[in-house]
Amino acid sequence: MINNPILSGFNPDASLLRVGEDYYIATSTFEWFPGVQLYHSKDLANWQLIPHALQRPTQVDLIGNPSSGGIWAPAISYDKGIYYLLYTDVKARKGVFKDLYNYLVTADSMNGPWSEPVTLNGSGFDPYLFHDDDGTKWVLNMQWDFRDNHSRFGGILLQQYDPSEQKLVGTIKKIYEGTDIGVTEGPQLFKRNGYYYLLVAEGGTGINHAATLARSRTLDGPYVTDPSYPIMTTRGAPDYPLQNAGHGMIVETQNGEWYMSHICSRPFAGTKLNPLGRETAMQRLRWTEDGWLRLAHEGRLPAMAFPAPDLKAYPFPELPAKDDFDSPALGLPYQTLRVPPCESWLSLRERPGYLRLRGRESLSSWHHQSMVARRLQHFSCAVETSMAYEPENFMQMAGLVFYYDEMDYFYLRVTHDGDNGRKLGVVSSSSGKYREDRASELNVEGWPSYYLRAVVKERALHFFASQDGETWEPVGGELDMGVLSDEYGGKLGFTGAMVGLCVQDLNGTKKHADFDYFSYTVK
Image 1 (cartoon, rainbow, N blue to C red):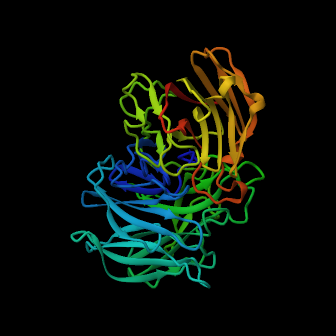
Image 2 (spheres, helix red, strand yellow):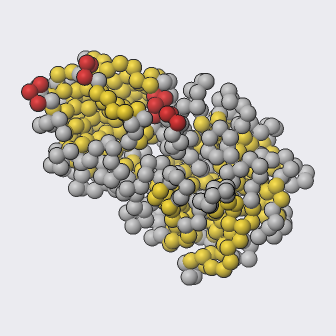
Image 3 (cartoon, one colour):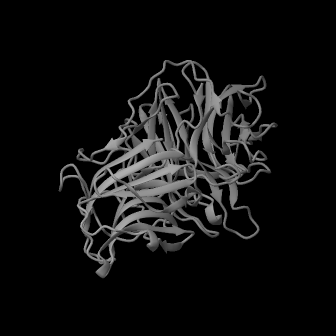
């Protein structure tokens, strides 16, 4: 049996692909760089992170993108030796309008490098590329409709893609309106036994999420919805451990077994809050005699565990818990906020064995922050670093941060407080309300270095500090990890908690901090 989720922590919108004996998943990365997180597996049970797809600013420019904007719902496909990746870059997401662009890149290997992007359209998000048997290629995406008295989700559009001209051609046709669940998006198309099967996400990405299947004898419809729709949903089951189940992608194994990847969330009991964000789960499927898909375990609720396919186990080495920053490049689990790493603000060479970050803009910025972070993937874990830093005034700060977005974060930081010298304390933001815990600040004048630690146990976050890495003292009281969740405070975000290292210099002088290591240990 394989336990869900298969990819824990902030891994939404999983696009699943098989090529021969290899399986791949692509997940959304939103405002984090590089874009589109990619995984590889041989057995659907063990997954290894491989290089992100969008590594260059010419492939994705996230500067100024809103939080939970950026890269949405990547879709991977394969045809005749070429891997295709489609993705949306959302420039504005709140209000009645959606400013966005859909792009296509290609590669000879899922490990890249990926090509420069081809611009497709901007009519709606969640693009998918279908390769038909006759060699034609077709792009599907949902239609966004901003008009009064119209559903914002206006159905699924289809248009032909011409690879020789690298553009969409011909008539745009709406092929599916969705069901009474509403909010129809995330199309995927595949073919079996003379039918075109259209899988869509419905109900929105929250508690009403669902996966619905329809089919047609012809590519452009009409598509008839499965009479027993949806295939899967957790609507009406608020106490079920896996919530928000939907946005699926279907694959057939080389042995003829069928599986579906999908979004899930594991909220704290009695709440909608989950700092791990939307994760990737998987379900085993079966076909009915009349040609519809069902969850193999029956019912519509996603299984907490599912039978592994008839494939040889293929485990990968685990990543080390501690990174000593001895490599000339950042490790694969790390991402930076909106901007690519470059020597102007991030260096692993200026002081060998250390990550040097030069301070730039504040934690409120959508532009040039100096932050390196990784996903929070466990409800119980410990994070630690050691930092050398010499701030000269209160405009300079550096330390360890738990970050959802500019509105919600917890930050254990060192700064300088004028005549009071260097201070180490906790600052936080909750729904945009900034707070400094001055009562618990430590006077760290004369400390040779700053060891910083955070311990997470379910909803509780505690910070600690040490000047020698041996004797630790608490800094601040218990903090609520529920703040770092998609739906905290009524917001609707789409990411998850990230934990990492950051430096700010609001003077504009780029005062640097050096980090000796970063460790992430599961408790």
